Length: 224
Image (cartoon, rainbow, N blue to C red; front, side, top):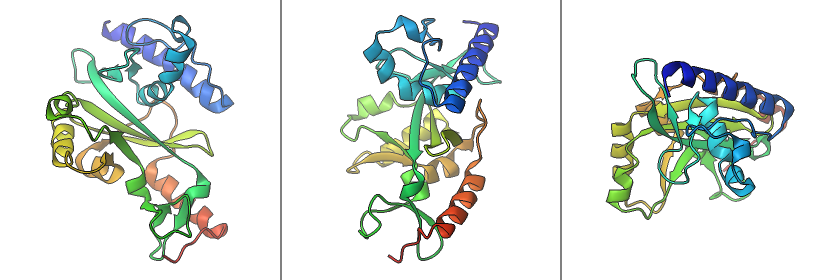
């Protein structure tokens, strides 16, 4: 696939994604995958299993892959001569689980009465990896990795970040012996860069401010 083909496919996929988000539809039958197939060419179960990858890839301009192993998609950066493999992580949140903590920061919790059932918003938004993988398998994760944050109430993209392959491998290696293997939004903000989305997004800090104001007005405040 050359650059012109990539741009054409990317624009087509972006239009489909924007339509799905605005109409709260899940019709991705005409989404074009990296391998050239469309959603309608896949079996129902395979297409359904790729739903998160389609959303996360198309949100940042990448072409999703139909493969169930390896890269989630492929992206063509402005300064590249060809497409590069990318790992995409999607993390969604609902307003009912957002609370203001005693110091004014935003927290996620599914049970605010339980002190241990909480996480700061920048820790909740994260990309999860298999904590049981060997170093050899972990080495295959040395690819561009993005985190797309999604608001289920507004059915829209909040923001996205991306990290370089070498940084991803280094961060995963440092966490390899942890009980859970995650790269949190804090890490993406610190070690990566904010990435422009192909569909409108609110922007994390605008979203954080609006959610804080909304939580206050609705009394979602905890005193842990």
